[in-house]
Structures are given as structure tokens and as C-alpha cells.
Length: 278
Image 1 (cartoon, rainbow, N blue to C red):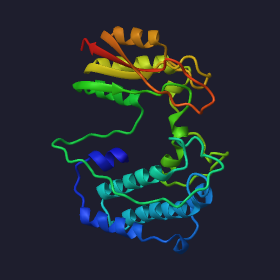
Image 2 (cartoon, one colour):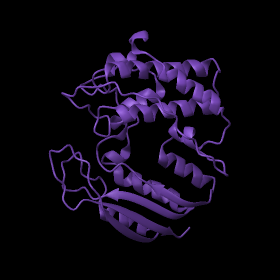
Image 3 (spheres, one colour):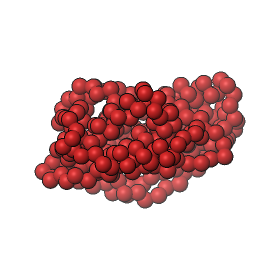
Image 4 (cartoon, rainbow, N blue to C red):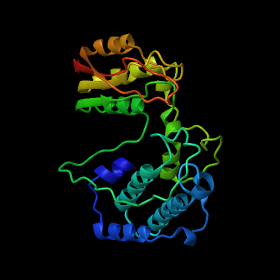
């Protein structure tokens, strides 16, 4: 939805979007009824008042869309703006796996519009399993200059890290569980389990048929705990890429994200670049 908001070149009315921004800026928490977001996330991920406004705005966007008061592009711009506005005030450490405890939450929410990009070319956006997409593009014999591949590194599922934003995106309001208030698991990636190597190999085999350059980013977390350790070894990545073309690896020092309970030494982000034989 964020990609749709920024990149699709469909028409939109900026004055209309600005009017909604002004409407949301005038919202008073005392005038808003408790909603799904305030009941579940108030005084946890956000202040109680902020969560009421967030919930109201999210439901208002669906209402505007159903009434056709906004077109699809305008809906995506307004929704993407909500994501960024929410993330700026969230009581987290960068993702939504948990919220910070023993913190006095202040009302800080401010709805700000994103600035969609004006591009000379049209953009195609897909939302599906990358391996399935790559295989379909290969069947179509699409010619691609560069494929940038940034798979999950470890067993921690990304959909669980960003469950609140995903919840806000779909607004299906599922039942939530646990301290972090997560829905039942969805969109689980094979790159996070024992199937990582074969899944990565399958993706590369498809892309190598139609791409001139493959760029893969991956870190070197092998000395952390079991959940944080990288699923693919350097040898796995190099063997798979080198079978498809000349491959080089570039390393950069990179500050790791940790919960503060452990320390990773010599942590690096690696970039593998493969010039395929396609």
C-alpha cells in the first residue's frame, strides 16, 4: 500500500487530500468513541488519546473509499500518510514485536501527508510470493536489468515484527493474543525456517534466466542466539549465485539491532553481486 501511495502514477486531487489533513488535525479525542485501536493499543503502543484518533482516521478512510469520496490513489496516499504518522509516535524500539513498558505516554500524534513521486515511467507493483512471481516472470521471458533481493535473515518472521502496521493496513480487526497483542500468524516466510536454502536457490534459478544482474543483501549474524542467527551461510549464498554467474561480495560494518541482552562483534552487512550468464 505504501508503494501504491508513492509510486503509481494515477491521478489525485492534492487540494482534497490537504482538506482531509486539516480535518484530521482538528480531531479532539473527547469527541471520539473508543474503537478497536484504542481498546487494544491505547497506553501500550500509543497514548490512549492518540490511539483513539488513529482508529478514527483508519475507519474514516475506509468510509471515504466506500462512498467513492476518494479514488484508489487518494486512498493509498492517505493510508500511507497514516502509516508514517503512526510510526513517528509509536512506543517501540523500531518494530512492533513489543512495546516499551513503564513509559509515560504523551499525546504526540500528528497526521502528515506523504509526497507522492512524479515519475516519467509507469510502475508495476506486485504483492505475492517472490518465488512464484519470479517463476511467472521467467515464463513470460521478461527481460530485467537488475533484481535486488533482500530476504529475511533469521527465524524471526517479519510479519510478526510489523503486525500492528499490517493490521492497520488491512483494518480487518482480528482477535489479538499475548503481551504484544498479535493476531494469529499469517504470511510466514520459508526464508525464516529450514527451507531457506532451497527456497533461495529456487528464486535465484528463476531470476537468473531473465536478469542480467542479481544483487543480494545479507548479514553475517552467526554468533547470536538461535532465533537471530542467519539461516543461510556464506557458502550457501556463494555456491548458489556462482552457479549462475561471476559473483563478488562486498562487506560493510553495520550496527546490529539487539534488545540489549547480547553483543554482536564484527557485525557486517554483505552485498553479493552476480553477473548472470543469461
